[in-house]
Amino acid sequence: METATLNNTSPKSNFKSEEYFINMGPQHPATHGVLRLLLTIDGEIIKKVEPDLGYIHRSIEKMCEKDSYQQIVHLTDRMDYLSSHINNEAVCLAVENALELEVPERVQVIRTILGELTRLSSHMLWWGVMGMDVGALTTYFYGFRDREMINDIFEETCGARLTMNYNIPGGLMHDIHPNFVKRVKEFIAHFKTKLPEYDRLLTGNVIFQKRTKGVGILSKEDAINFGASGPVARASGYSCDVRKYHPYSALDKVNFKEALDTAGDSFARYTVRIREMWESLSIIEQLIDNIPEGEHKVATNAVIKLPKGDFYQKVETARGELGVYIISTGTKNPHRVKFRSPGLSNLSLLNHIAVGGKIGDLVATMATIDIVVPDIDR
Amino acid sequence: MTNEALQTTIESWFPDPEFSQPQFSEEGSQFLNVSVEADQLHELMQLLKHNPDTHFDYLFCLTGVDYGKELGVVYHLESTIHRHILVVKVQTKDRENPIFDSVQDLWATANFHEREVHDFFGIKFRNHPNMKRLFLSEDWEGFPLRKDYEDEINMVVK
Image (cartoon, rainbow over all chains, first blue to last red; front, side, top):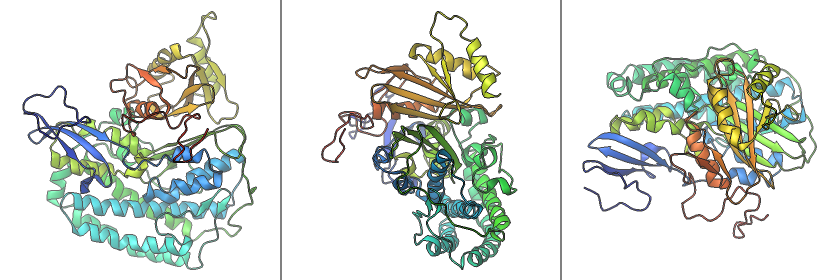
């Protein structure tokens, strides 16, 4: 039976009589933004998931071609807005490497601390929403309560709570607030008592475990084949932490364990992120007492011209590997900028792991992939 | 494997000097770059992936580029075992009907990324199972990331 709602964008060919097609999104709350999924289903079993993208595409890559290198930084925190600081850092590192500019150690340490705070804040929001997606509404309030402390630190540091714009090529916009160290320490002490609460509330919950264990299994080979990165790939046993393999800023000075799992199911992706939160806390603790004195930036020319060539910078955002690829012809504008977003690659494997499952499981699986739509629609 | 060893290995796959050779360059880039003719692209990619010495199984970035006269695609490859990185570049002068072989049979991630390049540059990929626009609607005219794209309403000029 074909439904009456079929239009030009629907996959109406090759329909069997018992299969039908529904839209999930673009306003579905579980899609975390304007993402539309075209589901072909047989009863409740998913036969095919096809994402329909581009609802909020802003063509950032085209805008970059007309902008100076300082301006590009400001566009990047509108991609994956939950990793805004790390995105800014990626562009700044790419420009600094191209100019062979050595930034002060103080800048490197502050960047890493803020980067890990960003990761924590992103993972907290993810954890809250993850619980909500599987029906545990309380997690949402817990996550947002603790995230508030990080947002306050960000606000005091740079005036913004989400889109930070604190990095500039050559260092930081201005120095940290005198309260910074104190407040970060307060946060660490607070969150160390709260993180075990997360486990008690959700991780050990039998209903939650039944919803996530053995669901949406991704093998290591497929993770590599689909270009997965971040917690999604690490939960399948693919060791890919950019912070380990291509350390940047102060990450080569700290000790941390890469969170790895081999199960590859939704629960493994969940636990990997929980363990990453512990590691991020440990990284911040190692650095917060040893912020070196010094300048918070080095002077660059007001008009930055990159030498002719290709420049690639990888960083590890909360979602995975972000790549900034700049092709320069030696002028003040880049010839081409490409952002390799972790979201698009991670989304491309959704069809692979969701087929054969149920619609309700798709919601849980999508939550563990942790999609931020502006990161996909750049 | 070092860049020199990579270069030697890849050169050994093209023993016949009568055919065009891949061009190597490390200038202005932190990685080893290989430029290859469009008709040799798929064969080279297949060897790069399946040869145990190179074993490039992770395609982490696929970029379309408009060089002004030429259109091109840049592939960033990494090996998850050897952890070396290689950049493969391919170009065509044909702006009317640019076409390259798809590599989505080798790396599944190329499926979406090739559709993105198709969407913004109008480059077609041969043997791609679903060669349609990824972000823009099907009735969109032109290819926005090309340098000669014009959109007066949004002040996009050549």
